[in-house]
Image (cartoon, rainbow, N blue to C red; front, side):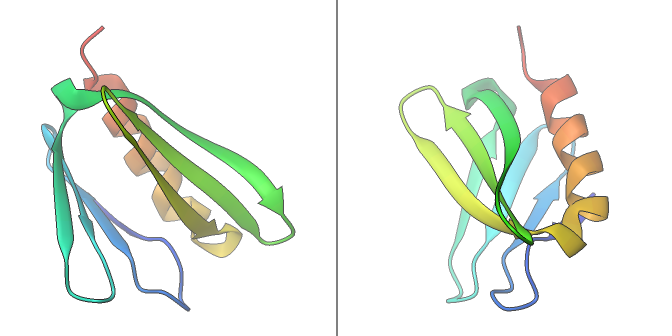
Length: 86
């Protein structure tokens, strides 16, 4: 499963059922196993933008999402949330 967060900043998220991977526009990436994720949530912030918060056990990631990209981001978030061990 894959989702692009914004057209202006091509951050791409992928999820294979166990590992959430974030690919950044400057060429870097970050891999996070679901056992290290406490929660994932999306909150509207300003017109046209939402803030994706990935709460890790010792850190958090904050990523801007264009509302136009929500149709691909929301199902990915749902799959990540289902895979988080509780």
